[in-house]
Length: 112
Length: 114
Image (tube, rainbow over all chains, first blue to last red; front, side, top):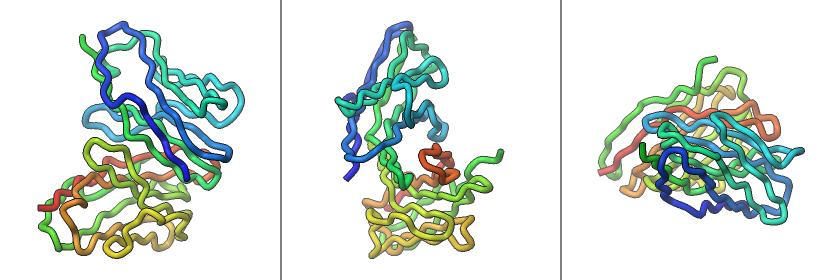
């Protein structure tokens, strides 16, 4: 069965710090990988996705994620965070039937 | 394009009562999902439709939850009777249905069962 594990439940950083949020998944077949973000008071929205090809994918707002197949990981990174990045971040894994499973989320708080 | 519409935004009921949520997906999206998000947790898939057929309902508590997607467009999710542990945000999402197409979420319905 598919599962997604996010290592950090709550992260606090200062502006301009670098960010890395961990995500590991468990699934035996070919996967599609996603990061979704939920800003305060808003609905979930797609940050970036990986289907195939270059394992380093770039998303909106300067975020990127790297798929490492051997480690079953898809960590999210940003070199320099901003106060506006305060949000909850969800890693998600999809299979070929478009069944998409989410991790428990990481709440990111950026100090101004 | 118009987003995924959900109603109501909030609902408060007593345990053992029934409740229904409605979702209108983005026009042309073949796949529709209902997720349950309990406070502090990630969204948990309850049911996935492809057009008007059920693809996955393995995590739907079928003794009390039901969902339908008549005509392959709008969908309703019902809980009868509700329990305290059903308090959560119920999210509807849709996608084009092609392999790996991303989900578009509605604003959700926050259910409180007292």
